[in-house]
Length: 127
Image 1 (cartoon, rainbow, N blue to C red):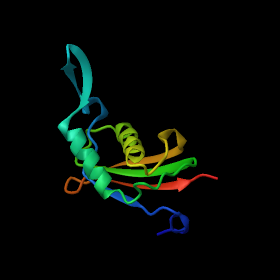
Image 2 (cartoon, rainbow, N blue to C red):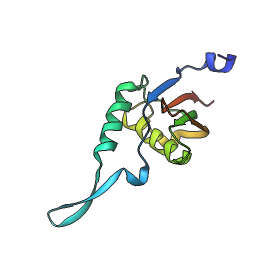
Image 3 (cartoon, rainbow, N blue to C red):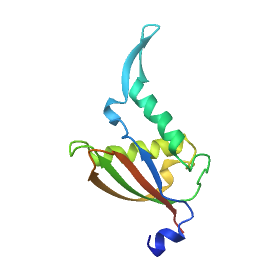
């Protein structure tokens, strides 16, 4: 562990599994004759899993922050940028952060781990 990460107020988080693609997270449904969007079962399952694994839930970080994220995919196919948006949405949903617009910097890496796909991230408040 380097000096900078040991000074970070928030510990590194590891969330096992991979976020679903943003474009495949919703399906069109009809309610009383009107079309609407509904989350897919895979999206709901990932949200529940993220919530249970995230040690920062209910932290409500309300200052600008930097997100450093490593996304370990099972193949080289998925897009990295999609994962960043999904993770920010999940962090806001589980109240780890107050609002994803407070993210002022993102450092992201795409890595491959066929046996153990996951995301590893750290949040560092900006001064």
